[in-house]
Length: 192
Length: 77
Image: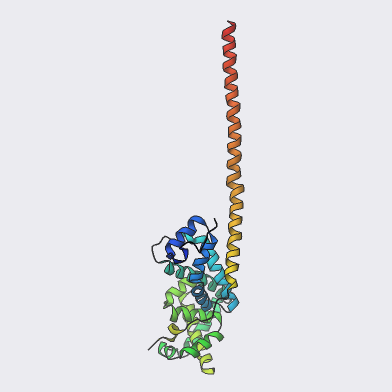
């Protein structure tokens, strides 16, 4: 089905109506309108989880391809933007699981944890005292696995338990990684 | 105290060519689905209806033959 985007009011349609039309017609030009509305937001979220721009671009592309195939699952129980946010978040978390799996050594981590916990913990107050500009620069230099945990904890307000469930890891492993990530971010921050 | 993580803005722009990549991928996926539907659903349906129709014709011919044969038998008597 060819759609004349100019002569119709598709561009002013609500997200929910647009989704209905795409589900019924399968039209990729209409999906392009939805893409234009949300691509930048999805990309910004992916940037937080990715170790490079290339990876963030690939993640964004994957999110939209998967979205097209799963649009019929949107039942309109929440706003489309909210649904898309959790759809994107879940996709990025799944990607993060793979990144973290590569470096997962639970037994070694537990030993490391004991050593690390002996160090003084960096408090949330110390983290909140960092300036935005320098923090953003420091996040650009830190490892992806540390960045993911820091952003889940401090940007998305996830608890240790929630992060552990999402990344399918033990709570003690997450505590240790968070502890290490906080130390690293402060180290990098202070070296700037 | 304000949380600086909440103020971090990702201001990097998504390259325009990603949209073309997404739409091309989707068109390819759509084509693949249409082709597989054609061979797994539509063609068997069409074949089924053609074969079904020819079977009906044969059945009708057979019935007519039997009726004619009976008529002829009755006429002979």
